[in-house]
Image 1 (cartoon, one colour):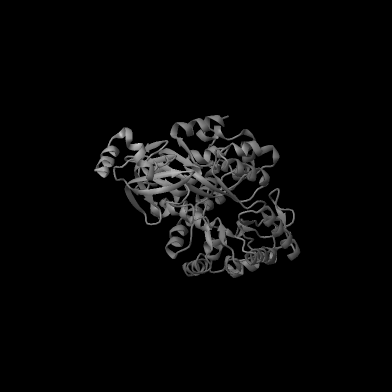
Image 2 (cartoon, rainbow, N blue to C red):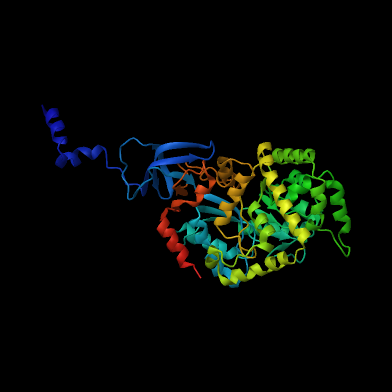
Length: 478
């Protein structure tokens, strides 16, 4: 009888608190997203009607909706919408010296507004500022993407870009790598403006021995095969892959080497026509095999190549996004613009042919198993390559080149996370991973341009509606 009385007492709401002593009420999640179509970027499939529970910036639960509401401080109904991992832009630049620190910082909202929650800075001269921004973003004091950085680039004597670390001897290389490790950079970026063949290859090999990830531009005095065999983890842009696709690569490389120190040293752009004429499918297949064997990734940057090829004929003065770019950064565009306008008609025509050829490399590399990373090359000095939209343009060009939308999405999500060894906690939508997410109005697996129809961005525990994102952009509008 006493047991029956206890059961009856616990059936009354006013007395239920006392009976729940053994089952304390569940703490509310920060955010629960209901009825989402989750895009699995690894399989290219849609998982319909999913519920996600998020707390402290992490996905705590991911399950099929079962009708039982989860306690939440905030609930977001994603019925009919599509949820993807936040996008990764794997090649951006923050640079220009102390006078452009604020101008560069004000680019951060442009990335979030286009669904980009992680960027990889590919070398510049604002490293202390980047580390400061990264701390503020993690602390929730600054709205922006997660930032990975190489810190200063490694190059040769009197390098093109300010802030670079010049190397000639092995002692120089060791000193440069020591300084980068002391800075705790995320990887090493090597540039080719003045670095010698030996210094380049020895930098790659030395960094490999230290367990440091390396990417870079290559001097045409070296070959991509050599660099990949030494441990190069990624090649930026397609100029170096393209050279390796020539049946005359060895003789072209030798000619470039012999020209060094003469009155007219041969550079990349001088020999591109010869490479184009001697393109060989057998050589192409061979270099892809090497890249796959050595796990060397490639960042195609199709968008900037196309934009620069069209720069002589295109008027960007009325671009809608130009108003969000600080006039100080806009002034850095003059160099590229003036150079483009000085090009001969023949060179302009060749650049467009080259762009078409580069497009054909992308599906061929993917089919061969080469890891592709999506990068925009946005930043100061890269004329009209606007942060955010340029990565979306890159993915659209990848699809135009022959990738499926799912394959293109992989290059800007899970591939980037794997490359930076962050895939255990980012890059896909899974319980236990960071809740860096983008909610879209349409299915990106049907049309990659659906990435431009953003409903909500979630990053670092913050929820940004479309209206919030517009307000963020207005705050940096000029």
